[in-house]
Image (cartoon, rainbow, N blue to C red; front, side):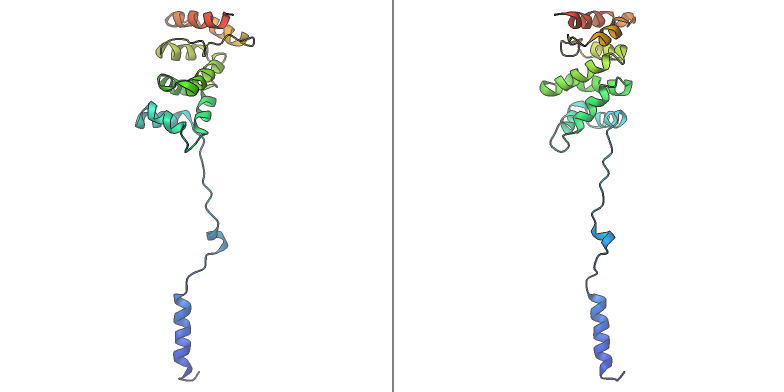
Length: 166
């Protein structure tokens, strides 16, 4: 290489080193966002950190409209951890959200009647929405009737009153 070409070669190398780096195909793809399903423990942690009213507002807000659906689906299983979540939310759930909580508690009656009755007792008693009178509630009536805990006798009677009315 001649001495005259040396400055040109140097400038070419310098320019190549300063040009913007192009992203590889792997870097250009957006990272997949992993959305974890809500668990009763996670919701309980949120309630402990921010309070039930705030957590309910977040779960029913525009940021994640599926949050409340996940909560009611969990409550409907009758799992004790989800029933604890329901107990925290029930005093704060009104309107559509209160109806959703009541429906989820009704669905869990046939799976864990003592747990649901304990939630109802702790949060103001049974309601017509929670202890529905429907044509397909034989399993729920049987489950509530089978509860023998004397501490739940009043709320049991109240719930059965709603379930058998009509």
